[in-house]
Length: 269
Image (cartoon, rainbow, N blue to C red):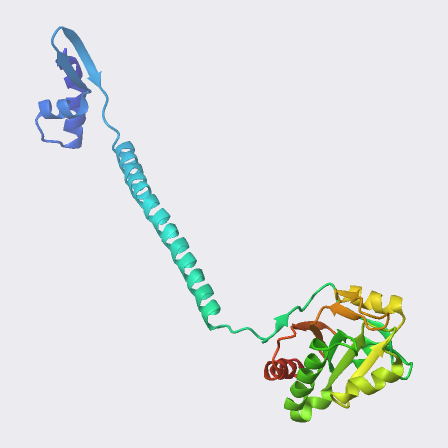
């Protein structure tokens, strides 16, 4: 049977000048056959080298890709950890290094203590806008107060003097909670007794109550031995506005003059 295949190949080889043994030529050109025991001859297809190269390249790419994924994930995790640690460090440094801007209580942006409408000793209507350009300190009390009112006004007068040339840019207002006894004439003498620049404000009972509500000031009459010897329980803090008329600070009655002066100076810029 092989001789049937040999003749054409012998002719081709002779024409091409191929001097190899004809049997070798036949073996290299004939399909490969596998002989298995008890089984007829089976043709084994010739391997496609291009396909092998492509599959090998794909395996290498997959190998590189699968090996890179954990590395990218690890890098991403490390970056997140570093960012978190850096953020915590910055927060700790800010908490350690940043000092409060004011000595007293900062209430900037409060939704109360926005304005008032009262009258001074001359009967002129006064509002917060009348003192624009100055730092305003507003204190609620009454002239018959035995302790906290004179103490607070004394501290405010001392703080104002500590400001030196800037004292003229600070206005202290004393609002009476007792319009029944604190007449305009009495206020005209009482407030300036602590500092000539201090101004006393009054109004009708409804006006005083409206101002107290706006500033969340508590006050209540406490009866005495006679009808006109009563006292008032009342809130004892002061409110501070900046030169633009914005509420900024609350001064408790224990605030010291030097601390008050330092806060007022900051607001003056």
